[in-house]
Image 1 (cartoon, one colour):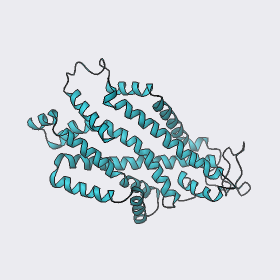
Image 2 (cartoon, rainbow, N blue to C red):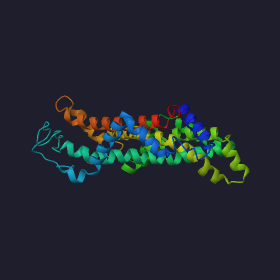
Image 3 (cartoon, one colour):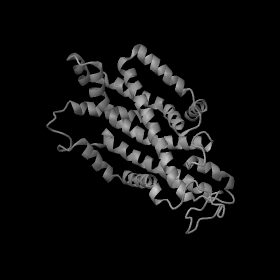
Image 4 (tube, one colour):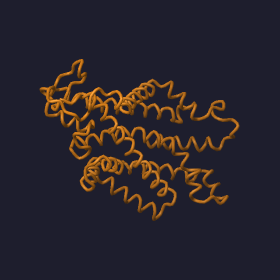
Length: 306
């Protein structure tokens, strides 16, 4: 991943020194070129379509869900899949399909918000570390090394134990645990750009530091960071579901894929559907995001542009 990002940045730097009139591939806008490459990639099309379907089902859950996600029904506990309950019911008689639809709203939100927190904090620290260097770089990288000393899930567990179990704290914990990756990749990219001609020229003409960072350096690292963030959403969903599975994330009766999976582990031998369908939802969401991320990576890979 890091070698690919450095190759992407060097290609962007070289392209930035070419005459603007020639453009890229006959004057096509970069966004249109990337969209065309994504459209020709079967993995990105399949992943994107599946992700859109999952997102729409979660977004429209209040309108399309057949039952209340929290209300219990003691007349149909652990009912197997049928026409009335396509995915069966749990031990409280709640429709699993309905709870999966509502749970998608929480699980996907955790992934998106956590990656947003990690990307904003990590990119800011990485830019400052790579650009200013010396004491700033030393202080930031020692902080990153401290975070890396803990496994991601263990760090998230420690944060949740400190802040308490709630949806907001779950997002914060997962986001903080993912910060080091963004810091290190952004810092490495900035260091590779610092000696490029366009950055040196901006310094010579007297551009201020914030102008150089946000107008010249940041645009050259945005695209690979988008790929990293896309793939990071899948990891954040898994981490958030794992914390909820352990009882440190979203608490029942609120539907969330992780705590639904935890509720179903007691009935694996007698009511397999209680754990199977929430696990399937997690798998499909992560699978679609990974397919889309792979397609983005291929579309933005400078070695494939020829």
